[in-house]
Image (cartoon, rainbow, N blue to C red; front, side, top):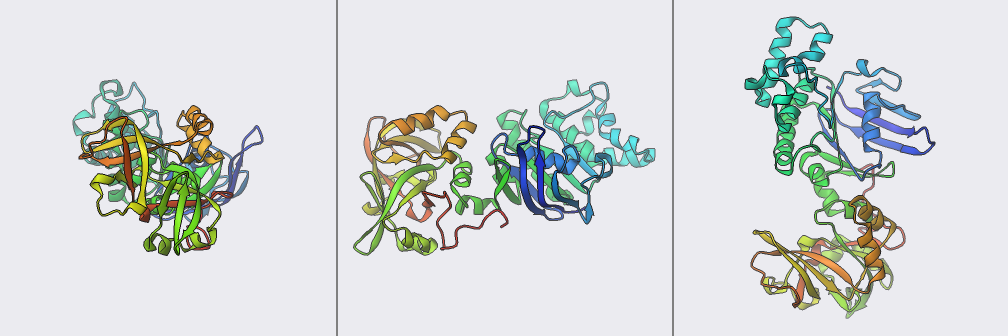
Length: 409
């Protein structure tokens, strides 16, 4: 096993544009690192550079202590799992798993032991004689995993391995992959477009945008302290609500003002983000996650100073919770970051609509006991302890005076 280190690594495409720009990242021995970001952000290119399938224009890439910039893929001692499974249709499951070992001319007994061990770990013991066409998507993915496991490499590279599976099977397989990686303890770099996968699987997550690392941190830190508006908007489902706001002083307390909405910030909020005081009288971008909004009738402990008022547009009952879409007279923040995230989600027209319209539509994740109905005007309680604030000019998170921890954290 070995760690993987990017030292100011850059990849310039044939068109002359930077697919990966000055990437500085140290992945520890045995760590499960997830690279996540919108389509075209450079995450797959970074993975392919580790595999030796993309050239390194500048910088140094190490696997363990060895510089591998010019080492052929076959000599890098890594195993890759692809989105497409890449199984040989004419070979049995056994032979697919054993294929790489046979190329290395390992003894037959050693090959059989490794294949049987992998099949037992992956629940494939009863399928070793079958061809890939006789397997389900999840079983094919297990075979691809088995082929990687038996090689006992220094690192696993996984490029969106679950994207061809249905939603239920993806949940099952991501749990299995995380458990398997934990059991094997092999350094793993996992690329995904799905931020839920990233948050649930990675020891740390690296968020990328336009070829550059934005933030590298444990999943909870990305959620609680996003370094900038892009990370805050990318992490979380449904996405963070973002509003134009101004911070004002009122009777010695700081208030976030968005349209007629006035949200009083408590001592806990200011204690966690002391730099907010320096933004008094200045525009900011206010971020509110849907899970930090609640039907005020169910949150009696929240004072009226932490309420918003809105009109219900849509109510989606999901059993354990209700997703409520409501309008306010605040102004939606439509920045370059917001547009990019909307474009990635295939909803750029919604960003255009938000920019044209007066008022803003927010999403709240309410408790199942809420009785709000479409057309109701209601009070919404805001958990001010969990609010996010970003500099309107730079998009950087406002925390303790020096900004949030950046890409190297």
